[in-house]
Length: 220
Length: 406
Image (tube, rainbow over all chains, first blue to last red; front, side, top):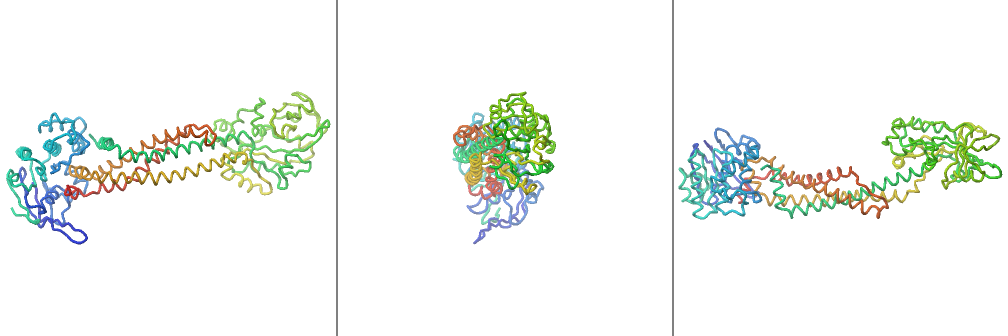
């Protein structure tokens, strides 16, 4: 379960400050599929990164499975992410000089899984996502949709409890968009909590619940 | 997959950028190793030359000139033989052998000769060329190297033992220089009378091309007796270790023998010594250049690398990498760069030294294994230090800012 209490994030520069999040509170139950929508600059990505333990809020608390993640030090928060969260990005962020298989192996390696186990698990995931014949291809040799599937496989590598997806369909054509959201839906049906940021209302409809952010404030 | 594989794959992917920094550090190490290899061989050549020259320090009474000494002037001043003991009982390092001498010119059968009293084994040790006459103790050939096993077996670790004077020339035996022998028609076993005392020729010395060829050598005690002198000498020839001479052996000797004149024959190898000094200075200059150019080049490369890989770093942090993992990736890469640069630099630098050494310094250059350690330590040190700040920046990048920029 994810619980956020009075979360605020203010970006400060020398001359001005921006309230990206303003006293946001919400709860997401285990196994839920939640989408966060809103116009550009409304604070969607900031909220997702705060939820993912990647950006320290100015005020407020984020609890995941009972753990107040910003009370953990940097190293423990990294371990927490590794064991509990999977990230999917709009631009996939695959490592360009590694193959699809190697990209999926990275989180397994960081979790201390040995080479043989890494290879078995990564192959299994990529095969499930229809990439059995693309294991040894680098991202530049894959289509956009295939790259996004590799990114999803990477996010799933350590059996996360929660998937955080930031505009996962932002760079995809309609067919691939449907395919990707269908995968996320499928994952959700296996019990994984999915939190997805999107500006596409059609994609947001796949979620069980849609949260709307405007100027850093939550309008459900 | 592991972090090491990530480092290697990235290196292979961006070979061209890597190559620029690699060449900078490689060239620096090549130059340093080549210069140090040549200067090292040159220093050894100086040491060998000094050893071959035998005695390289001369202790004379204050009022004597070197001309007086070589002419064995009948009125040449003398000094107490105790001075030998004073040196032997001191803590001065680098005195490998001492040959006290008492000389006097005299006429035998109408020819002018110099009668010289010596302590025979000390004299042999200080005159390598005499050792070819077949009566040298192998232990006396060990010369200048304190680590030489022969020196150790001779008790080198106790300087007093090593300097102990040994009697072995009989009281009425003599050694005759080659010129003197031919003028007097002497051969081994001949008899000769000097100042009313009969001597048996123990050996005819090989030709040395020095004043020794015209001398007749007897035991110091005998010379002191027949010349009517007490325990005095008019020269102490010293074999000083070449390294000790440059480290101030002469000054130390002057401190304990203030009323003497102490000179060296270092000028004979002065050119080689100057070449060594110049090469030593070059090494320092090149070391500074490599630190500046190599360090800046690697630092610059690493900064660009961090900028170029921000997105990758952000992704790694998001999927669970810790800042420590990021340090490992960048400093590991620097370590590889330094290791390859150091090893290749040592090999090529040694090769360059072996090719150029005979032309630059006139010496044969052999590989110096210790330089391998230095080459790798310097290359890795520069590479890792220059990469530390970029690595720290990478490890401290805010993933949120990176991911939001995308």
